Every structure is written in structure tokens, then in C-alpha cells.
Image (cartoon, rainbow, N blue to C red):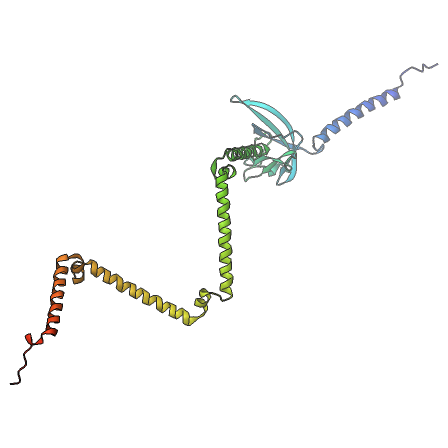
Length: 292
């Protein structure tokens, strides 16, 4: 009689196959999780960086936006007392020749807060080989963007402090009531001036006042021009006369600047006036009539 607790070979085979199936499924899941192709060969190249900006294993690698591989492994290394990260980029064999030795890799982001990936810009050199390093070009990331934002906020805070403390023109406008009042009065004055100019413009457009007549009436404009020319001529003659009076070499200048000449001329005119008066009163003293 057979023992019911005895292990059958068929049951053993089933258990062995079940264990192997679980192991294969786990390995297959690991391969698929790493975004690798089970049946294609790959070429591994490396990049070296001080800061990988959140890049992680299994993130993809692209050329011109098309996926050509994945980040397979990342590890730390030390060089010249500095800590670096080495990232292995596993490229599909069919796309590996696109990556040249003078190619440049850049860590980019899928959107502002998206996952990181490696984008490669190819060059004109020979294709990379297994284990080659390609240079990593820096790109403005969120860290640099955050630093710029912090600097901007610092400047804004400094500006607000100046405003609150009354520094600068804007601060004085906010804290100095007298200056604010004067500015308000200036704005009011400008508004009044603008309103007056608008009124004058409307009157001019309706033909009211002297200005539109000067613009539209040719005869009046001509008379005004002639009058201005005469005034200019009169002003020129007046200026010439004043220059002569100021010039001591001329007679008029001597009369204004030489008192002796003025006094002599005055006495001469007085004597001549007396002579004319006496001549009118006693003409016989000066004129004799004789017929023969």
C-alpha cells in the first residue's frame, strides 16, 4: 500500500517549474522596469557631473527628442578631493553610432517640475565606443531659477524698505505730506493748463480769435508780416541811433559825453537867439538901404 504522504515526482516537477517561473517573472519585471530591451544589444557611455539635478536611474536618454536609451546606473567617484557622480547611459545598438565622441549631453526637464532626462546633441567626430565619456553641458535648471527668484525678492524687499523709510523720490512721495500736496497742486495746474489749451484749440477750430484769422486770412497775415518788418526796421534804426549816441567820436556822442561842447553850443544858440531878437527890433542897425 502506497504512503499518501510520499512526494510524487510530478508534484516535484510542478514545484520546480513554479519556482523557476517566479524567478523569471521577477527578472523580466526588473528588465522591463529598467526600460531595456531583452533581445537587443547596447553600448554604454558615461557622463561625469558634480550635480545631476535630480536625474535618476531608468530615466531615458534622447537624441533630438527621440529616445535612444536609458540611464542604467549612477555612482559616486572622487577626483582631486572633489565628489562627482558617474552616470552610465545604455544606448540601443542601432542608435549608438549617432552619438559621436564630440557630442554633448545636457540634463533637461520634462516641463517645469517634470522628470529629468539626458538629451544628446551629436557632433561630427567618430562614433563612441563602449565605456567612452561624453562631456556634460550645463543648463539653467530650477536651482538657478530659484536663485534668480531669490535675488529678485531681495531687491523687492529692499525697495519696500526704502519706501517705508522715505528714501528716494517714491519714498518721499509716500511719507512727505507737503511734497505730496505740492505734487497734487502741480497735477491740478497741469490739468487746468491742458483744459485752457483745449479751449483755445476749440476756438481756433471754430475760427474765433486772432490766431485763426492769421492762419486763414491771407490779407491780414500779409499786413501783420509787413507791420512786423516795419517794426524790425524801426528797431534797427533806433539801435543805430543809440550806437551813434554812445560813440564819442561823433557829434551826437560828443554832445552826450562832452559837457564843455554842450555848454558852448548852448551859449552859441542863446547868443544867436538874442541876435535874432535884436535884429527884429532894430533892423537898421544891421541893414542899410541906399537907392543911389
